[in-house]
Image 1 (spheres, each protein chain N blue to C red):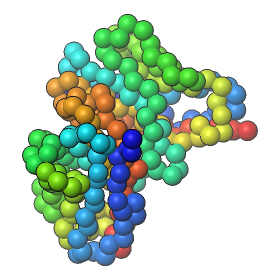
Image 2: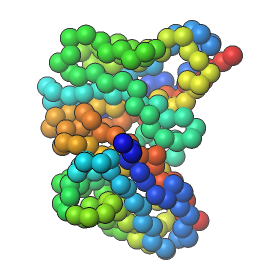
Image 3: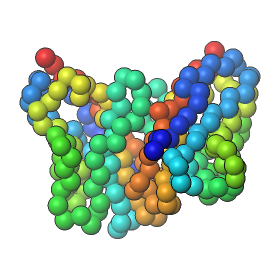
Length: 114
Length: 114
């Protein structure tokens, strides 16, 4: 049973470009969480989605960031007009139910903005 | 809201000895879970151990055990018989029933000395 998959594993973008990060949850999981880890810090919650719905986006920056989890295909975290401060590791986790006790993490995408 | 405090930015331990990593938490939710994750230099998040707030016994997983003291709101991780491969960043996290996401501490960098 494949785990949570994220791609790309490493992404380099110039300031002003767009970054698209993909997350394929574990098979059968319909709940997805995105977290961001800035250098030298712990993970910070960004957004929680179920299929086709954003449930909780309280951790998302108000501008430039958006997330979706369509009926078919992976969840996408989109960052428009990236800035240097967006450089971080972005982790996706998935769960079978909405409880937080069973989240499985992907390997992360390391975004570098030059 | 939930909060995790890890007061040890860095710890050193001699190979084959035991080490305790501190974690204190704060939550108003009576039902919650406490997690420990290991993040090696390669960057992935590796789940180590989980303790539920209503669990009567301290959780153990191989060389990992969780010293759960509910009245003191602490959930320290004990690693016995340290190995060189244990050198990594360790994060404590809390997930409450009222909030789907996990809240992480700032981490402890453990270095195992030969």
